[in-house]
Amino acid sequence: MITRELARTVLAAERRKRSFALCYHGVGETSIRIDPRFLRVSPRRLRGQIELLRDAGFAFVTLSELVESGPAHGRPPLPGLVALTFDDGWADNYDALLPMLRDYGIPATIYVTTGLMGRPNPWLAPDSGVRMMTPEEVVACARDGVEIGAHTLTHPDLSLVGPEGCRREVMGSRTVLRELTDTPVVSFAYPYFHLGPEAVDAVREAGFASAVTGIGYGDWSPLTLERTAISGKDRLASFTLKLLGRYDPLLDSAPVRVARGATRTLRRRGWELLERHG
Image: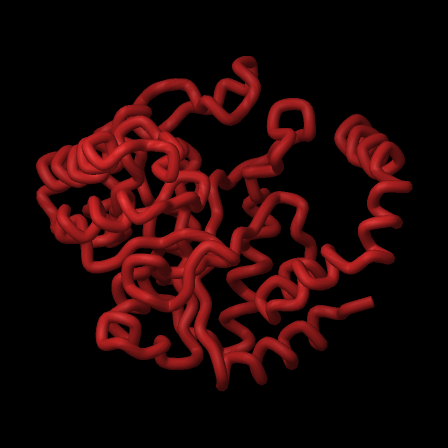
């Protein structure tokens, strides 16, 4: 069993060697019924993760600052940095995340899907009442120092979109956000982490300085930057293992695959009981 002190110690050692870009989506209380993919992280858990990284000595930066520390110049980023990034532009990024960033005095980067602004959240159950940020809320985040990045117009899988479609989605979202926030929009996030040559070409043609994907889809090149995805299921152990790069290999090992298959129904019932009884 991993303790918080052990997690802090091993991450402090890792800080001397590496930096991270973390990928989140929503911030709020959730349930398996309305959020089956656990895209929301509870405020309490996110605060715990931020405090763990802070106590391990990491410096919080925007994604663009992380890129400027190395990848923009053809090398890995300086060690000891962490960029918190949030995809899609959920309304709770304004309601819950922004006050948290103020409390800790740290930055973050939010990637906004411009065609979804103000609409119901398409990834959660309709009766969840969760929506996407309005244009006014996006502007408020930008004015408070949050870096705003582009995340396409309509959130398609760009690996399945032709060259013209990629250009329209990529450039269109940047244009909307630049006009809306009156700030440079220099970073892009590939929806679903998926990309192909046409998508990367569109990002380059649009003039983005950086673009982010996920673990297994990219590297430290400026337009194909890897991020570690954090979900609402990640407790202390899995969060720490993900940052150490050991979570996916462990999950893919034969014994764990067998155990997960055998306990899938039990684990689901456990989540449902936790939700029912708090």
